[in-house]
Length: 98
Image (cartoon, rainbow, N blue to C red; front, side):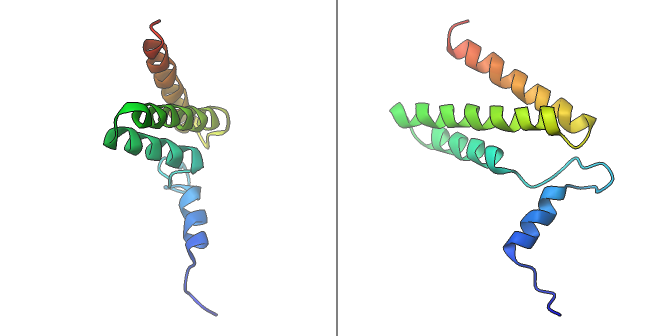
């Protein structure tokens, strides 16, 4: 029996969160990784690429927040989702001049 862990084993283990009894911390999921990539692209560029990066950031963050709000592992994770969704709504509203 091999004890070597594959990257997919480590990824699945990280998605369960820590601590196991009340997961607060976990590896980023796909929407959050997309948001972080968009944030990085926006931070490193200007002109239209900056705008596309910001749009990707807010879209990914909204998707992550919605998933946490509706399917979060516990009350704290659902509250983080609600706060993240509120952050996106307020900032997109400001960007639209509301």
